[in-house]
Length: 514
RNA sequence: GCGGGCGUAACUCAGUGGUAGAGUGACAGCCUUCCAAGCUGUACGUCGCCGGUUCGAAUCCGGUCGCCCGCUCCA
Image 1 (spheres, rainbow, N blue to C red):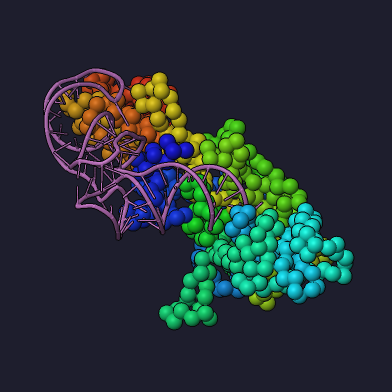
Image 2 (tube, rainbow, N blue to C red):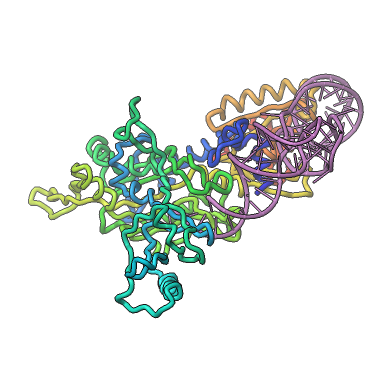
């Protein structure tokens, strides 16, 4: 991992944010190559999920997969996050034990004491955890030096654990009293103020996910764009979470970008669509070079599902820092109609969809129609995690090569698509190279960078392109002067072939899958 | 939040109280007809930051910030 991070810095893929000021925990910037790589991955998602979903494959029942995009705001009405459950769920106060180094959710701790107020010490235990409860009873009995009956015990469930209270408490895994800290709120949502007055009434949050923007605009999209269920709404953008522990390079950042699709369908068809999406999303990541044992599709066990969720699968990648385990790239969740229900309740707006293709057949040949809250399948991918996985997968070490470190980035994602070199900077070769470079640039500038370089030795230039992940290098040599051919060097094999200079663009176009 | 490790040039690292170093990379020139080759030269340092001890600190001490690992947490 250190070698990958060093290369990312050296070649301008990823820099630490605010580095000259000492860095800022949980934030990373992308350099010239990294930002282009990230854009290519984002574009690939947009193309394959919105513009031509699933490469044109049909969904369940042979139906065309239809999706439309939206772009919603990072800051939404604060009630959005109350409805989504983030305000509660992202604010669990936690308590730390200075002795046992453990951390507890404050609302999970209970305290047992005797009914005798002179026996001041209390013993904490974790609600629903028999081990800590029995331990607490045992310790309490020892402390008061007598056997305790039911009537002697008092269990405090609604404690306000301030300093005075906690001084009397022995933690669940501690021996001494007074080692628990006061509850601290872990605001996983970034707070800000809307308007210049910045009072408590103006509090707003930076979104922790892009999905809610879609649910909030669901009705507008249905009413204004002639979409029919089943269909999807894609939304890409930055989200923010005040992670307790940002870790593992860009894997868990506080500012990160998501690519989320909310796919709405009839409840009866939701499991079929879930299966369809879970399989396509896996195939999509595989198509970008994350094939093989480092990628897996992991089904969330029933017991770990959120209460409203009927199924969930994660596309996971085996990162160097998770090895031999895996880290989540994308979660495909069956969310039922939870979100639309929540927003319907909290906002009072009707979210029901009127499906004119369902219901009983009327004499005039129309359907009566059926009103329902669609179910939602949510493939939600982490763009920065995707970039990181691509970088990890691409990083290759081969000491037998002149360039021992190189980046095997899939041609579709590679920030630099091709480079053009004169073998040596004389005999008119630079001029021919510049001409070919111009031609390729005119043809491929929308896809990514096309480089040219006539400095240094050819080996050095190849090696540079290898580290940048450029898949193909065209080289003009003395034969070019005679027969109008160039060599093409393949990054992954180092092998070369000779093609007509007039076919260079077609060759590259083919290799890039255009 | 706790514990451990680390922080010196763009990268990898040496330097344990006395003038800031090496290799690689970058840049310029020469040379060079296919893989970080060779020669010459140039640029690049708040030694993470702040404070303390000392005649003198990259080096010792305290604090702080950041990165990595483990726990915890989180999806």
